[in-house]
Length: 80
Image (cartoon, rainbow, N blue to C red):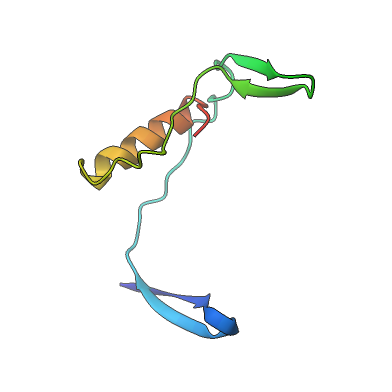
């Protein structure tokens, strides 16, 4: 188990145990195939589709499924 030091309340340092999480490497071609749409007059370009996470998977599914969905959406250049 690894430890990480964070700045807590009022600048106090805390050391917390952490799990080692495998490094995620995103698809380097993710922005090449996504279709974008202009948003208003600002010129801002947003992906044509997005993955809404307001539901947060609600604990109704296992964490790994949610992580897999978010990573796949990121690889497809979806707005998350």
